[in-house]
Image (cartoon, rainbow, N blue to C red; front, side, top):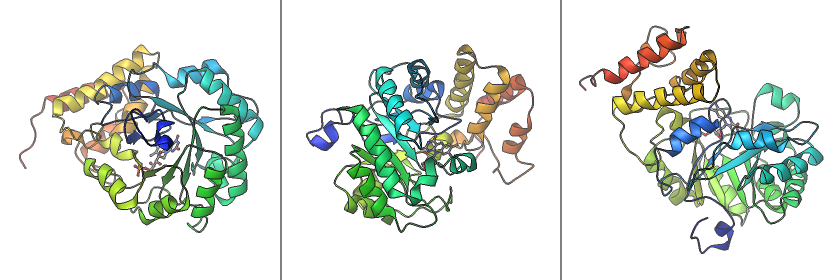
Length: 330
Ligand SMILES: Cc1cc2nc3c(=O)[nH]c(=O)nc-3n(C[C@H](O)[C@H](O)[C@H](O)COP(=O)(O)O)c2cc1C
């Protein structure tokens, strides 16, 4: 990490200790750029691509370069790969660094059914030796350059947490990120930070804590209470992209974020339906400035109403209009 005197952290490219989680369907280059623009590197130290699935052949460098997007001067982007075979993974790791990635992250947490059927991502949480072999293959391909690994606390339960953490360390990873829910727990509301402490105790590489880091103050709290070196936020950054600095956005700023994201996606070649789909993905979570009222489980609420809008221009007009509305009295 920039300026760190701890040699374990000096290997890592991150600018500071708060990281934006990789999120498929959300953290594309455009989204990351709009979030990066809101923050100083001291508040947001790094981000990740959506996962790139490696199947039979190494992913070409040109595709990985597109995933990485434009290089930000201070807030780096790690490239996340998900694989279940060492050979194509090793080739993809080499290509990722050639494409300019400052770090490659391996995904062993994805609980999606297709992933599990393909025995990748979260399927490997039941098999620490295979995790170790894949990490080792990636680390060999990376040479001196850093590889990080993101796991969940386990598959059906957390009994293998220490074994998984040690497999990642023995494989040679420079950083272990633990999403403290198991695969079975999915995205449950509760998050057990004691599992982060257990991971910290099991290994000597730095650990990044993820899961239940839902407020700006949690970034510092999770480090203090569990001993993790880094804190990672996923969905709470979709609810409020300013969460890393704690800035309280106005309704206009909140609407501008969504409209800027939409406009930049269109400039990058997305068609109106794709743009609306990605904006809706954010609206499911959005809380900043109370721009959107109603919960996802309220069919007649404003949020579900926005998600039902079929016409992309109408959706964006409604967001702009919400940005002009004054805040409702408390
Ligand atoms: C929509 C969505 C997509 C995700 N995609 C990925 C992914 O591509 N790679 C990954 O490692 N984790 C992925 N995750 C998991 C998050 O990175 C994170 O571990 C999880 O959301 C828990 O953190 P949170 O409680 O702060 O949201 C995804 C989560 C969500 C909600």
